[in-house]
Length: 240
Ligand code: SF4
Image (cartoon, rainbow, N blue to C red; front, side, top):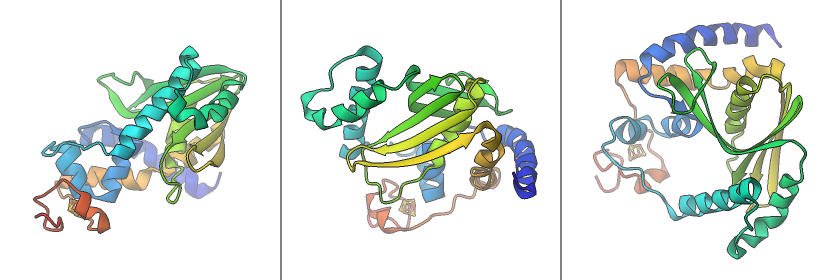
């Protein structure tokens, strides 16, 4: 590990403790992504709750596929015919040796230590689609039913951090984003020693999020996606 990463982690550790006091809500990979995409939209929907989060057809489809794969592994339920194209991949995963956890809800507190997903002290939350623990090695699998064009492995990194913290015996993680519709796999491997570098991936955005809360400044980030945004009060929304 480089000196730079070590320093960043030391700062991150302090900031993390500070952040717990200054960010009045638990964050997750998806909420951090929403904040990065547009702080103003994040504030209106996730913080002030002035607008409801709207599920798109793609989101509903993704939830149904996740549920079908979860039930196959956790309860042995046959994958419905309409999702039969995913049977092979889920059968392969089910054949891996190890203890399988599906849709595993994990939380960390402000000291970045394990806590229950629903605990009052929870600081960051994550749900691992499939975690397979086989001794010192584990697999972290995230199913993706969407486009693989902007694949982001930050989610794998956060899930790996949480798995390392909740399962102290794990030394090595083989993580994968499975784009099951696109038939593409993006793999990453992490060792327990990588934890500081994994955390460092999130520090810049955590800093910005803390700043936004402390100043109550939520800048807009206009893009072509503004036309799908429910925040009609924003001057960049075509329906404003
Ligand atoms: S309209 Fe665009 S800039 Fe405004 S809140 Fe929505 S996404 Fe952000």
